[in-house]
Every structure is written in C-alpha cells, then in structure tokens.
Length: 262
Length: 248
Image 1 (cartoon, rainbow over the protein chains, first blue to last red):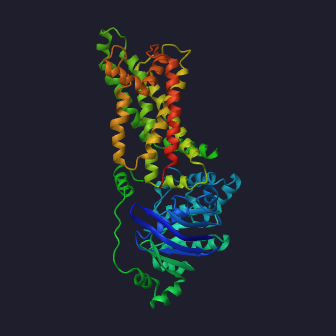
Image 2 (image 1 turned 180 degrees about the horizontal axis):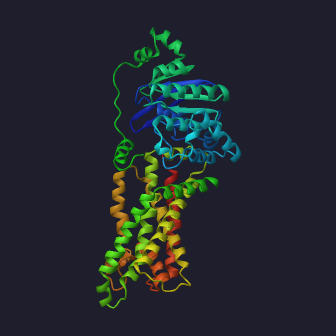
C-alpha cells in the first residue's frame, strides 16, 4: 500500500529524513515511532502530498504522490498532529465540508456521517459547535472525518496525544474495528509504546532521520533482548532528551488563548 | 465547483455565528460617523462644502468594507495556525477553487458589513442623492469587497505569524484608508498627497460610492469601476499564485 525507497528531505543544512526505506502492506496497522524531531511528521507530509521530497521514490496506493496528487489524496484520510477542525462549525458541518471536498455523493455522505458519528459516540453532539468539544471528542471527530470518504489508508499522526487512558483505549478499539471491517491500512505515529505494541502488527523506528529498526514488536524485543517495546525503544534510540523549539504556531495558539477560548 | 460553494458557505456561517464581533465591528464606523460627521460638520459647512456627514458616510462605508475584507482574507493566517488550512490542502480539490471559495466568502461578508453600516448611516441622518441609481452602489461595494478580499488572501498566503499581521495593519491597511479621500475631499491637495491618493485603490472605491450616493465625483464613476475591476482581477491572480505556493 505504501512503498518508500531512499526517501530524502532536507531543510537548509538539516537532513530531516535521510535515505529511509520501508513498505506497508494492504490492511496492515503499521506504527512509525521515534523521538521528537526524528522525522516522523516530515515523512507523513511527504506521503500525503504536503511536502515535496528531495530524493528517493515513494508510492502510495501504487501511485506517485508527486505526480498524481489528487488521486493520491482521494486514497487516504489523515489525522494531523495538530487539530485541523473548524471550531466555529458544528461536528456535522465539519463532516459535510470534508465530504464535499472529497467528492462523496450526497446520499452516501449523509449515511456515512451518521454511521461514523455513531461509531465514535458523537452522533448526539452533531449539532454542537466543535469549539465546545473536549480534546478527546475533537480527536474522535477528526478520525471519523478522515474515514468519511472510505479511504484505503488512514494516517494518524500522534492521535492520542494528551488524552486520558480511557479515551485512548476506546479510540484504538474503534480504529481496529474500522481496520477489520473496511480493510483500511493504518499508518500511525505515537509516543505511547504500549499503544504501538498492542495495536500495530509491524513497526519502524526512526531517529535522526534514519530508520534504525523494523519488524514486529516481538522481533524488536528479541533483537534488543528487552521485555517491553518501551525498553526496546530506549535501547535503540538512547535516553537523551530531544527538545523541540516552540514554533510560531504554538506561540500564536497561546496568544489566541488570551483572546478567546478556541 | 461545490468546494467553492461550501467554503463560501463556511465563511458566512462563521460570520453569522460571531454576533459579538458583528456588533463590535460596527463600533468604529459609528464613532467616525458621529465624532467626525458631527464634530467637523460646522467647519466643513463654513468652508462652503455642505454637510460633512453626507460627505463622510460613503467613506465610512468603504472603510468598513476595507477592514472587513482584508481581515477575513487574512483569516487564512488563523486557519494556517489552527490547522484547518491543512484539511483543505490535502483535499483533492484544485487550490484555485479553495482560494476562490474563501475569497468570495470574505467579499460577501464585507458587503453585508457594508450594508449594515449603510443602515447606521441612515439612522445618523444620512440621505441619498438619488433613489433611482442607489442600487448601483452595490456594484461598487462588490468591487471594493472583491479587490480587498483578494489582497487579504494574498497577504494571508505569505504571512506566517501574528507580528506580521500588525505590520500589515499599520503600514498597509490604515494608510490605504487614511490616504483614500474617505475623510477629505481630493481636490486642491498638496502635490505629493494628490499623487498618493491617486495610486490608492480605495480612493476609486470611495469616489465611486460618493458618485452614486451623494452625486459628488472626483475621478468619474466609469474610471472608478474600471480601476477597481482591473486591480481586483490582478490581485486575484497574484493571490492564487501565492496561495498555490503555501506549504504547511
């Protein structure tokens, strides 16, 4: 479903993604793990047509995202690391917008919106403005929205960040259910190793822009001689802390908080 | 084209829901109308130019639309920071359509704001010069809204944070307003100021509105309309180009 070979992305003198190669099979749940700033989000952006790679080949659903961006976009759904809902609109209106963007026929859009909002326990709240939603509700709505156009691949970039264990647990149950019922391939990143261990069939660990290990959670544990994926992860990436500088987005978000509650 | 429609609808929905903002945005025009209209009225009258309230009302209408359309065009900046822009950029829809939908939405909102200020003007005592040609004012309002929404979108495409926003307000939007003849007559000006007012696009918008609403013209309505339309299309082109270059 996804095939990446020798993919490279540079920002100035920094090589964010350094000749990585991996493949994700149809119907698989694949976890892409790594410390902050390792290159996870950059890779997702290249796979989802938002960034142009500087080298290497990539294929999403058999197509090159560089050459056939629109067809590729129709194939996947994505939940970004940062929220991407319109808070002024209601849940149903956010779904409507997405459905129209992705050319879902009206009848199907309405039926599938109901089905997905029910699955993600948001049907009763469909008429409420999203800005009044809790973090967990927003995330569930984003996943429901990403699935609206029946994508073949679902990208989840740290979807459970900041959520309580109950919500996380339920969210993964729902994602696994969709993976089973619609054979949607899931490509996820997370910092919660327990989640990755339970949810993903295969995973890759990226650090400093390079893939340093690939395989099933079991294989990685055996390879490093550790008992849990978290230990395996630390054994592979070291225990040094990576600090990311706060971008302008974060600054503006704090600024906005002073003015209104978004 | 349904993407254009739904993005247009989104702007309207957001506008209708921000009631506090609608009321707040009427405060400034009211202040201009009351403080300047009545405050400078006697001086203007003594200079033999008639009622200042009549004179300044079209300027205040144009000002409202300038602020409204540039601001909502730059709403792109907020969408970028709060992520919604990404949702539109991964959609299998040509970027021109996304930009067009947003822009038409911004322009429509600006026209509605302008019409609200027209009502405020009437309440303050403004009277039309001719009822028969008054609907033509809508054409000029549309042109003003179109031009400045395109400008706002173009700026919003290149700006990355809120500091730049202040810069644009103080060094672009406010000068466009103050140097447009919205507040003063354009004749008998010092040479430099006269030249500046002639390159300010809003001058033509204000002049067009004034021609229709109070029957006083400086450039002539035909020239006003042509300048606004040509500049509007030009900015739309620039805006689409810049919008197509956005990376998130």
